Length: 554
Image (cartoon, rainbow, N blue to C red):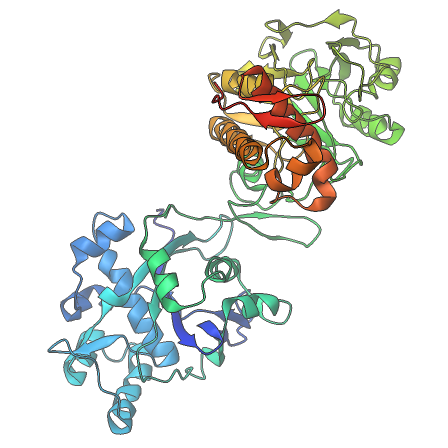
């Protein structure tokens, strides 16, 4: 990590209670900074003296601790800091006697130990001196590594923080320091999250509580924490939007795009899709989103302007729905003349604005007609019919390659901006939802085959028809293929269990993880799965009912 980061450690302290798993939260005093009044776990910066306390640790040396944290050395510093900060801030001491036995709890001894909390916090005495005087060793082996958080770019103070989790020491009673921390509460993670309107929770705290909320006891949580997991660094990115500036985490749709358009972390990228507001994605690409958000279209249909160059000429990919306001927004966002119009396919949210846009620009229309008219835009007439494989030079350093990707629609095309390895994917890949495959124009076998073909392309980004830019295209498409094949296995299992059954009878079995209100749409994709299995010899139908043949799909 950068030398501009301060090392820090956080300890999530948990216990079993009659109501279930509880976690200790402390409220920070008002100090005039963005952490003021926040409910946090015990923790703080790693002190220089924490390394000197390695000799006072039990059950873990620096080599093993560093290996846990993926560091060449110094990993034990974080463990020591977590134990020290927990003791300073809430009076809970993870330690053993010198012989390794549990630390006995009696009022007189704890009164003497508590006097050290302030001395340690103010730096008047060292942790080693405390361990020697108290006759204890730090039980760092009771800490389980939980996560790794780094403060977003652009913050005045940035921290490289390792999170640990440990069970509260038996018999000890938490007592906040009444200085930096002014209140404490033991809460079930779900209850803390439910009160997030009243409890100020910083992003790492909230995400940690979300991860813990599914566990009912300490044993289950600790078993999960010890299991092999992806413990890569989590560095939020600050964005702006409807709820003001806030950190955006890697699991949120806007995360990858924010890193591309705001690499220095100035906080000027948006975590919301805002209809009609142009977003500059690169020197060659601008996005304008239509105001047609819905269950089917997500935040709205994306129209892309691609081009620029010496002549400042632009292409439009997917003009969008028939909406004069949207067309006006696209025209206003174009830095220069619009010379080309490309459609990924001719569903009602992607191509109907083609006529309006052509009338106002004279741009030449490129695309492909569907094999079946149902659900299609009948007004779309391409002047240049595309079949896949064409390369269109918008200028010397902006080339679109056409890729025919049937599946969602028979005429579906993707456009690859070769210079940026960015695929304008239309509805072939959508963010946060799966694509509906609606026969007869939609074809599940063709869809999976098209995805697999795209996985062989050298891609850095997907620019979807709905949502933000997506990084790691190969991983995204592999996940979609895996999801479709898992769904196919559910179809086969349902056929084998139900015997001859109608689509309606199969629907609740195969899409039991989908809200019933979406079942009419899911029925279309179910039919596509059945047709694929029929063509592969794994299913058969009499037109009203389906059954498994016993053959496995290819």
